[in-house]
Length: 270
Image (cartoon, helix red, strand yellow):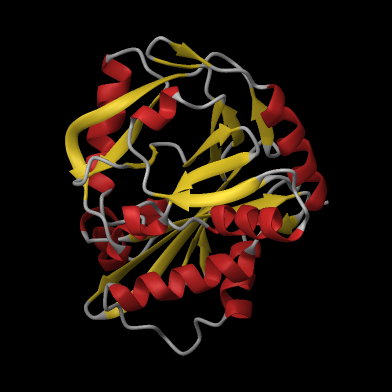
């Protein structure tokens, strides 16, 4: 089931042809939103990120794109699911057709946010570089580069790769925000490095700063050597949760510290 500008259709080929052409050929802005135990997580943060992206890419923003209206459009899809899922991922896609901003929303069932401690190998991706700066915080900016990097990871038997910017600083992993654990510090690349400002990243940082976590959050410029100097690494993503990184080249990591951190954070979402 798809929500095309408020109209529910079972198959995309039933959508308006101009809308379908734009969906498959025009430049698009994407946002992934999580439903957790029947509640949309971090919707206010997602909404303002959507509006900021539309504004930055000079899309016309319709007056009816209010926070409440777009939330209602998300939830329209679920009465048509049987049974109604408690955990799901919504994919919102915005594009322009003849000067008019339009959207398509799809949803799929998902597992709850979880901690994955399966073997997970990473390396650096050096064949193309992210441009540092706040335009790269928007997910659509380097979409093609991420597709190439994903193919590189697959060809080299890797679960993920870490992207670099033109200053050779760490930016993020393909599948989410990268964190390094060093003693009582939790270190992540700062937004100016070019990493995406995911809603989950924002919520996690807010929790770290306000819930008296045992970790001190630091957003810094990080060179690749910092990976080997860390006790643990993990990737935070809305699709999966906490992904423990088991090894980077010849360096192996433990998941013990991450297990407690994940438990404390997810408990705060209940």
